[in-house]
Image (cartoon, rainbow, N blue to C red; front, top):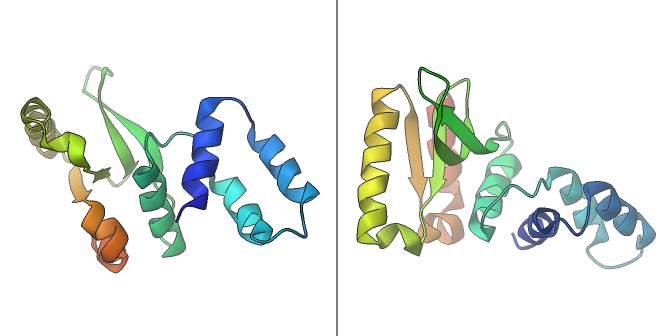
Length: 150
């Protein structure tokens, strides 16, 4: 759960590329954990804005669900980008969000409610998860998304 967020952060920082990460993993074949890193580097994309987004994506991938698109932009009928979702399935109009402490701010809550109402009115089915889900109930996450996809 900690390795993919580190790889995503490394790519997001711009100081390393995915090819460089792969080369580094190949250069250290005998080290402990290198096999896991070799499997995770292709999943790393540097788009997650926090560790929990990377972890949420990994839970879904590990459950053999289709990989969700990170930082998915939702457009209005005029093609204007309105909202960005943490993760989602564009064709199915399913959005996935991790809500951390920043979502408890009063202004953020107002924005979130307006956003949810617009997304719902425009055919998006949103699913929200918190730290409790991520760290204590990953099976709840996978069951919820599996049900939404079926």
